[in-house]
Length: 311
Image 1: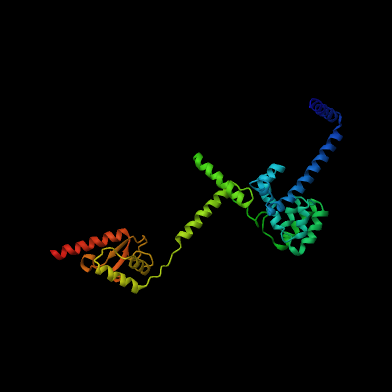
Image 2: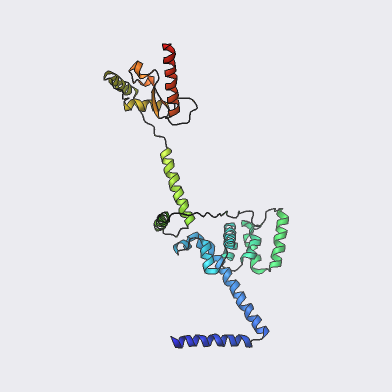
């Protein structure tokens, strides 16, 4: 191990000495060579991103997003990744231009200039131009094409930039543990890495789905004859308990709403319209379901009428 470290140190010193003895011209040529290679490999990496995104390969490799994938592997910024994916989407109906871009033959800067003026029928023509002509010629050709078609679109107008926002809040350690456990469960089910924002979206979707199921109105079909029969039996037995089948019939008749017009409160109280003390009957025709406020109001009106009659 010591010998290997010593060897590496010597190689580093020799490399530094070699660089110092280079002339300005030689040093410039090295910079030019390495910089050119860096641009070439970056172009090739950019061309791979749309296919990586399409296959969701970044998720299966443990990255939460294509942006994290590109940042960690190539130091690429978030906006640059968005622009590359937008450009790839714009080239979807232009196979020759798309092939030139995704193979790394043509870089983003040159391709972005022609992507928004090229059409499927001129795909081949523009592909040849971006491969063989310099940047200045491409710019002039694009300018002429826009002048012909009176194009008023800007480079980024066709595909809007995605809107992102940050949400931060403090949570109890137990809540955090449960949230992480839910994230792991969802990732195991999907076989892909998920961001915390996506987990939160899944959780909200579950809640909305549950609420939608609860809000579904269940129609209960009740036989009116059966309800009348049960009401008569209750009257004969002098029971104050309203039969369940009668309650269901009254609710179904009112469509599960308060009997008072324009009331939006849920029906909660079964009310004897003429008073049970007088009728001793649970007949559906003499019953109605009211919300709590209207039920209190109905009893208050009934008591007022009774007092008025006595006086």
